[in-house]
Length: 235
Image 1 (cartoon, rainbow, N blue to C red):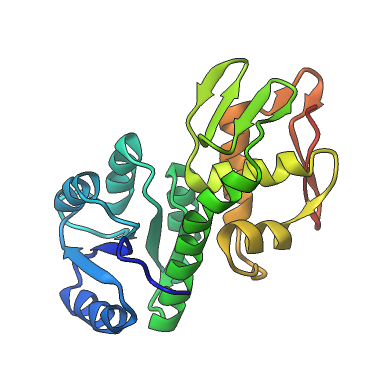
Image 2: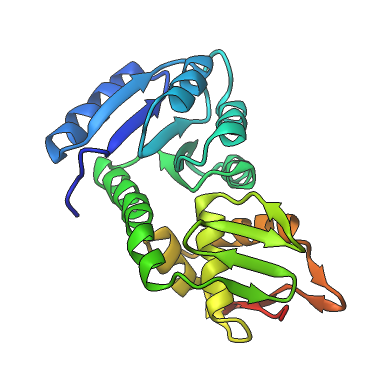
């Protein structure tokens, strides 16, 4: 995927050597890299800059990664890829609950980092093309989603969603009444296949349920089809 002039990446990590290594790997691919090493500086930079994506470590001085993410989400929808300790499911779940778009366990292969970044950029850069082709608003029950403005309302009230949550909801609404597999959602929304212990899609769906409400009348809004995927049933 070609890199555009807008593809600036902010890395928030106190491991200076790692930041230098990642910068050396990414810059020849056409990315513009900015690094900060404290959580408080990361919040300031993320909210002040025009970044395509933020790569955020959990363990930081100043403010930890979770608090940094909370403050970024309070003022920006910039995609955030969190770096977590390998095997630490709690960090991954908390990050996704707060609003991270995806996570990558440390230590990681730089090629995997590039793959995750490209998947997130590919999704965000294709939004405008998809919106032009699918500009009509989607309505299911009390929920209305407008692809053109990327606005979601429930009973007329604005619902704040992250980019991943919006894309998941749009995909589910377009298939309302039909099962969408976890693999389909992962490939189309996260840009990658699922692994046996990957709970990213499940956590994003959980966030959607919290924000939209679990029930629409007596009907479960987003039903889980065990071992298969999800179905948006509220219509």
